[in-house]
Image 1 (cartoon, rainbow, N blue to C red):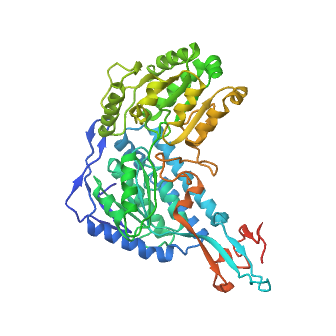
Image 2: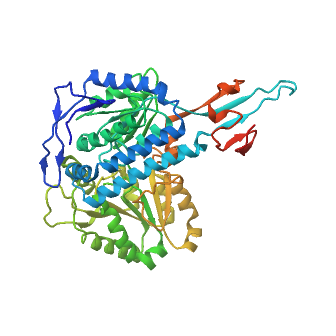
Image 3: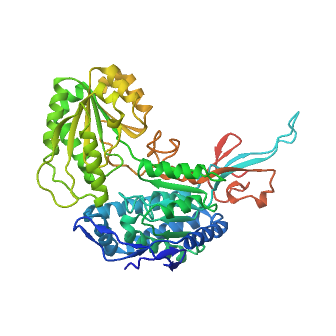
Length: 527
């Protein structure tokens, strides 16, 4: 059951006069529940409460925070089919996708809990004193990670569970010891409200401070801007468009105290199809990539939107096969009328560019908000000379760039913007002939894939979900996996501090039994 109210810590609030509804794209109707947009007063209350909560939450032990995260997972699961139903009503996505994304969200929460229990993520580093050292005595210095402060998380349109209210940004920030204020995405405000209830119940059951989590409604950009400019906010997590992410980044940089904005802003995810792969496996790869391009109606940030190959009969056959296979896929529903509107607009902009050839464009009748998939081709030189063709078309659309030779292929890659992923399709022995192409791709992406598809982001410690700008605002960090926690912490050193007053992570006795870097060696021993 939803009320349309904001959550200011463990209190509900609806002081504003501006209301809005969510949309059911499958049925193409407005949902009944009205949501009240947060006022400036409510924004201030949420941030002030988070700042106060930080004083105690930042000092919670890893075990206490782990218990909190596991409790959130339990509360989300306890909502059962009611939560799945509202997710579907606000996204048009099928039940299997809803339950799969919920499972991923639960997995993220429990993986951060396990990280907290293990403890080495804090990077505890100890250099003991040597007061007899000449000519200058060495002081005792100990370092560990500490949380930044209250974090604002912007819900993502395409992942209402995994990248939103209790998603990876929120889970990692809470694991770091940072209270979270979520600005729910207006397209799935009801889903966000229900998940917020789960988080707040978990906080109360595990004795977390009031204000460790708040959820604010917003139909436009005003609430987000107020949050990012609020002096009590210390960092921002965002998943969405380049325009939106860059705007927040610029606003945060212009504050009197600039703060980091960790934004993941989309990608065309270039795929390099090498000649032997096109010759030996072109038909099978075409079928695989038709599925990858249309998966989730092309609404993944890892959708393969660009395929690069060297002109040959095999590449032509691959393009024909891909075009044939993609129109066999039944069109599916996009997340919102605004999203399919942007898809059709950006697709049309691409189709109007000189030198583009349309090889597949689904022509049959489709239901409301269902997207027609398309495959187009362009020559390498034309692509290089027209940067409009380099931009993402969010939806089931992909472009094949036909290069004259390996030199032009490498040149095309070098002129791409930063990307989340890059893929090489080839034979093992073929890689040795294209090392410069592989190196060029590595310099443009955060993750490189061999003989696979970019869609599907495994949640594991080795995953890097980020990349050179504009795919993300800081390529040194990941938004997926336990190392996402590093966005919300900073290193902090204690010098010559009394042992009994040090955090447990740095005490001589190592009461937590964690792995630490002591005098140049990893160790779990006492000092």
